Length: 487
Image (cartoon, rainbow, N blue to C red; front, side, top):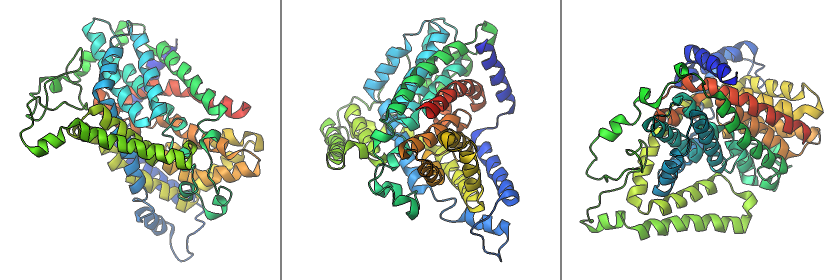
């Protein structure tokens, strides 16, 4: 029955869901209309009209261009995650895992579990590993004559974005570990209560979040297994998408090697080995020298270790996570040449982030300057009384994420409101941070912004996966809500 529900919802989304960039444009226009008609405009001068005031807020440095620095951090997370995922050891792991499933249902469950597991480590790593694994599993099943619904495999590969904000790259918990990080999003009157920040022991490493993570690692593969179509007429196989065909037939460039992954052609967006010919010049020798890459990789890791020893592991932030990913990637690739190639491939996946991030920053400016976000978040947070403030904050965060699909950007909007509401009700700041984090990650399953790299790798369209991710979202959403109420 669940598979039939998933098929029906998927067909509805395929007929109605716009592409991600079109969705960003539509949300910009809708937000503008709502802001003009329903906004309270707390800071608007009396002599300025609403439309001009909103236009000025939208075009300002704090509008369209607000997330330039944060966007670079997000691109680094994506690119370093991709580079690590495309290293030899991880690619061999992906190839080995791809040969394990014996049915389409077990394949979807395994891809979802692996994507979620890696997503808890790093959202960029989870996204790229999930995408590469979905494609390689589809290819492996096709070669063995096992029918599997490829869009469901792609949806399973997106599961890392359903758990990431409760993992080691969660931007809200990591931003709040230090006063300097908290100062980027909190106003002075709220910041004074967090002189030492909020340690990870109260957020990511809290009993509630550890239980939440354990629960989703069970729920995600279970629901995906149940969603697998039972009839062959509903199955769209890997062969129908022709993924990787042009890549496998392309002659390698002179700077590329000819080795491939075990069991198939080299995957698109994977770091390619350089040629086996010995380096001809001293610069070539340096570029392909393992000791040079290892030295830089160890330096990055040493910097993170030093940070942890001085400031404490509970204060690790986004910059430290990126440094760690850079270090690990350099060590596993074993040369700066291979690492640069992997980063170049991964940077293609940033195209959607670069193009759409300003639009979503502009949407945030419209919501903030009109007063809509403050009114909406406060009304929803207070709707159920003090005892349900975390739950209502979680639901409001899920709604806001549809308009501002950025964990850090959304925390900048809702963080002060959530912490003030929690403080008034005697709720720990750690729980309020995680309430926003859970809501933010939940509706990633409806908002396809972060799926852009996965769509490029797997060759599916956003509308083909959203029906399945929606079903998983409902199951996991109930789990998060229950934990926020009872713990």
